[in-house]
Image (tube, rainbow, N blue to C red; front, side, top):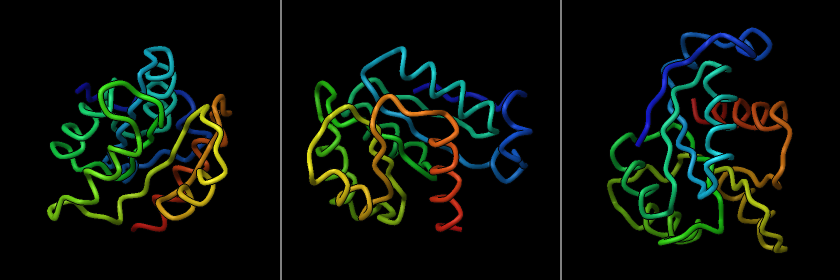
Length: 143
């Protein structure tokens, strides 16, 4: 797990506040490039970030950090995104209201439905502005 502090950058554009700096977002993806890009984008917007490079690690980090939101790839080694959701939702200590953004290049008709039930679905690649708008929208719903 890697936790990072917010930095200056797009924070002004997205209205970074002290409330955002208290919110943690878990990003789980097997691509180091995607992890670096999302880490930077989210930190610049004022969020705390925890990273996981596979599904098993995502479950561990989620249970340790209790993130406010999860950004999850579907196709990951060890445990895929579906398995991550299944394990977290099956855990009685897990808060099932934590929103999940499925950010994936996987293309299946059910992803839109699953995304709307658990949070959102965004296709890779996605624009940083769309990602941040989606994050802010979902986090506002859970406050």
